[in-house]
Length: 327
Image (spheres, rainbow, N blue to C red):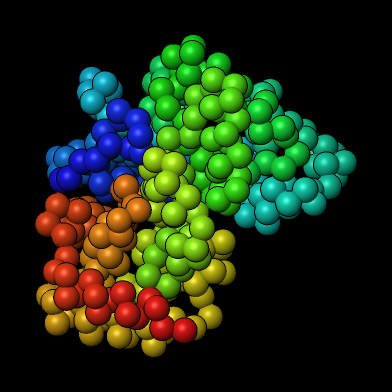
């Protein structure tokens, strides 16, 4: 396994981060426990979850699977901002400011049950700590930009969590370049903990981040954690139907069939699985610090870990890169 520092911080993480969004969803407790053990045996030190994954079951399962005798050697990352139990459509409505809070209140859901207000952030971290069975999080990330809450309020709440010792570092996810830079500017101006990382959707066929966000993160010394590097499994011989609805909607419809076939041929000639080539490509990008990947079995995880350890031949990466640049 290769290791790298997260952005300009002193935190060292594994280049492959085990993503646990499927824990409690398509991966049950027994399989998740096996995956965590296999990851640790291979040198994976970093684990990513969120309070909303599988209605909080992901945090619960990960918390039970991690060896707490080795807690100080692990890097546990979680996220805040969305409401556990909401559907993907609910999340989208809340983030866009279109949620009917009167209707939600009639179902026992308060406006403060989601978002990045001080009230919600401080309450949510306590819940995450309890589910993960730990006293602190190594990396606490805001899951989405919240246009309804002053950014300074969120940053001050995160600063207080860092000062209290409940959080070591803070990061963000799915931010635009301008949102990231505004947050960094406020942190510098006010002397607050700054975002040391940004989670970015990035893969062979989804490269929008290359236009602004990746250069911005690199210039600011912010670590990049790439997610959905396998494009929902569509490029790797799977089907978008097996993914969560939000992912399936992004990569489904058959538009990627031709590219998936070309990638399969390139991978076969190199003696690799398409998933390995996708991951190797992501890790080869100069702006990417680490890649977050999930797996359904220890065998699948072993294939990905082999790439994180040994890499993919340069010629294979170049051929795969040409697929992603086709319009």
